[in-house]
Image 1 (cartoon, rainbow, N blue to C red):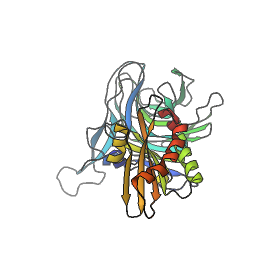
Image 2 (cartoon, one colour):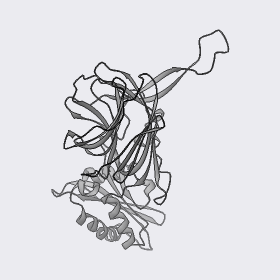
Image 3 (cartoon, one colour):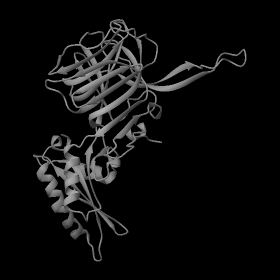
Image 4 (tube, rainbow, N blue to C red):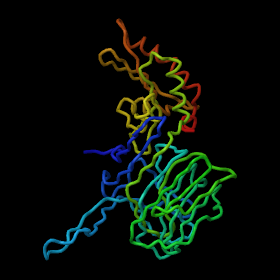
Length: 352
């Protein structure tokens, strides 16, 4: 069965008032592949890292019941396996489908090998490869450090010297509230900072290593206050202005060829869900789609950039009425799409 990025078991598990949770469960991914929804990149020099799902074979913690060899268990983990020894090589695996402001992230990591470095970390509030925060653990250096990358330059290191054995799984927690950042290692809070100058308020999440570090990451969860991007704000205001609408969704092409996903919807549980053939064709051909099921109609129209090329698709869902035709359905949807178009002439206008 074909799996999309949704197979990571991303769960939107609560309301806007109480927060939400996303889970990255690597056991749902195919061995040898990079998890869908993520993009491999790099800060500094060299090529992007090689991020793959690997199956780790571990001995059972239970004593054997017979003289036969002890039972072994396997589980899937995320691994960075490139071994570029450059001291200015920082591989990143960035989750592309969402930005986070305030959040608490929990993950497990294990440094496996490396001659120059044995590091594993989490990059967060990633604006781009030159601006983000990172917390990382070093098994060779015996340090747990936090710092900010601003315009490609590393800021001061904050954090203690502490033994972090290689080949052993460790717990890491990162919490952001406004400009206050707390980081825990194996349940112990070791870093607490307040970024008072040029604080980064929101951005993407990513896994991070350095140089020739081969490091593993386990299942990861993020509890967060949902970040309302520009597209989501537009949809919320459109639904308020036109309360008789059944729904509005905005779709954007993903990094994978032929794939689209929801970046805005009146129902936040739809965010990140893949689009269908109709949304792909609307973006690919720049044409309008009309569909009807029982007494519900859908009109999907392209959003165009400043050059006139289709950059996204808007699905407007409305209740039908007696005598409803395709022509007047499109006529009903057109003013709504024009309002959205007036506020978005580039992809960045939807993602900010």
